[in-house]
Amino acid sequence: MSQRTATTEDGAKAGMPRRQFVRLVVLSAGGVVLPLSCGEPPVPDPDMTPLVPPLPGYFSTEERRLLGHFADYVLPPDDLPGGGELGTVPYLEQLLTAFDSDPPRLFAAGPFSDRNPIPTDDGLPSQVQPENGFLSFLPLTRTQELAWRLEIYGSAGVPGGGPNDAATGPIIGLRQVYAEALKQALALLPTSLDALSEDDVIGLWPKLPDRFRYDFPNRVIEAAVSLPEYGGNVDRRGWQIAHTLGDTMPFGFTPYDRVAGRYRPHPSEPFSERDARPDPDPIDEALRLHLELVVAGAGGKKFY
Image (cartoon, rainbow, N blue to C red; front, side):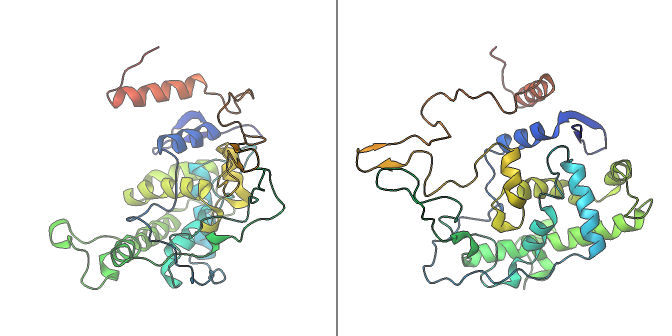
């Protein structure tokens, strides 16, 4: 299947390969650690209980399918999965139902998953892996809970409303944003969901509420590259697209050899030496021009 390009908000082709788009977004975000925090996460509680089984879906079947189309609009599939297959909808459902669990499913505890081995005394991979601490979630502080309830439920879902409602107006929560956008989108569908084409989605996108069009692309990228325990990044394919190993601890990139008293380089990921492997996703002229425009628009200079 040939590569398709990402599209802009008004439906025009952006002329940038999808994988380079992901790479650009991840780099420009400084490395995404998600979900986006409302304050610093608290210290893990050693007595916390494991995560309960996943809750039933938040969206209806029609809404899930439509969101999957929108996710593929933001992050189109080619030879690798698009936003829909990477788990945007389960990620959103877990976010919007976070407070249905106690503690809320917002800050995965860690510090390790069960995806990487514990190093041996001589700095080599062992056959032992830690328990997956990301399956447990941290309790929120009082201010974190208020901030996240306002984010998800809005002023109407918090006793007393938002602290600045009198000055700025009530906060519209993500649940309401998505409910209104999906209701409007389903009413505007030019055909059935079974027959919905990419061009239909491109035509529908500009007609959706601004708040949804602002928020949803961020959630697609979050779902693609966040920890799988947040509901997205199915089979860690998002990390593959972004050319990152994801979480690497406790083995890490430079395990310590206690026997020799030195750090060992990762066997497949050079850390302190030059990586002689070819660039897996080289920057083409379209992406280079895009970066130059972004830098120039921010007041930067070109030095080459």
